[in-house]
Image (cartoon, rainbow, N blue to C red; front, side, top):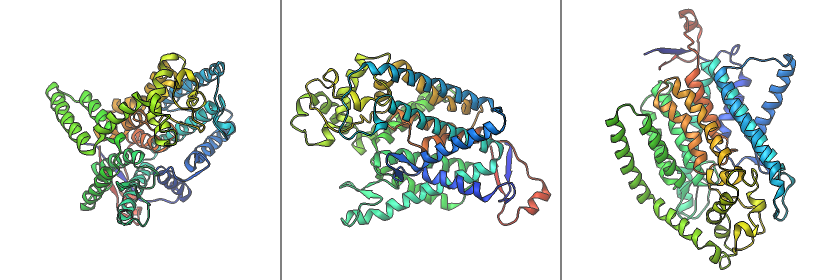
Length: 450
């Protein structure tokens, strides 16, 4: 096994300003609550980063060098964005039913441009961080630890909030009559997949001995408790999909069969214990009766908006426009068309189906949605080619799985997690000379194995 040694903080090669920047990025990935209007703080940082990179690009005479695998990833997303904007312009042929008080950024075409800018910011941040990690493994170590321990803090926050929620005093990190954990997020369903990313980062830290000791077993136990208490259906569906992919990556046929059988049994148990199976059946039943019962439940936002409505409307959109879609982000602008809602209730507010890639397929059409999936899996393909450990490969795979299971593309933590996976796969070996070790100073060396 190849060993890798990191020296402690050096104020010359590792300025404190960059440490602060990376800590803020890792910390903000833990929440979507901090935002101005509908824009998260980390998205503002992404836009600022794009502006800085453009200025640097101009100062260098519009010339730069690209690390080939990262250029490969960027080119895929560039093709996707151009294609999505072209389809957005083509969607102007539709009749739109705009919600009351809709902001300009939510209008047709404008919303597609806004989502393209969001996506570009996330891709830029991911590749910038991945390149930083590739060049200096210290930044990788620092950011991974920040990401992990902020995630642990969110779990502790939920655990401490639990008795307050049970007593009916406050809904902080725990909420609802199920006392669901949500950490620094605003909903337990979205929080569960984030906890998985924290567990995967922690597993790599432990594997490389960048974090070790009995405390890690305690922390992993707390995170698992938090995961179950989030009551997140997305998490269990995502883990099942991840298990299927891992089976396909397993070596021998017997090992694949064993993993498939074991994973199936675990998935069945989880779905029954958590009640996810019953809820899926309930969603399906409600979608079948949506057209009739939407008028009886016209004041129930949980029924006439979101997944139940989307389960009825989205398939109609896909059937009507399977190749070109309705335009990126236009679901809310056309969902009231009789062509899609049929005889169901008209809604006055903006809506989102929350159906992951199924909803995206209605926006983009099937061909471009498939291409988007390819874009999301490309980093994992590169990580796999580097023969990285299974934990690192799964960290790269978790982003496409999270988006498949319902997370919007502007959710920021999957992009940070993928940057960490790319950094782990491509980070350069930086052996430390004996003289450097003596000058390392305040904290001991951190030795890892790959």
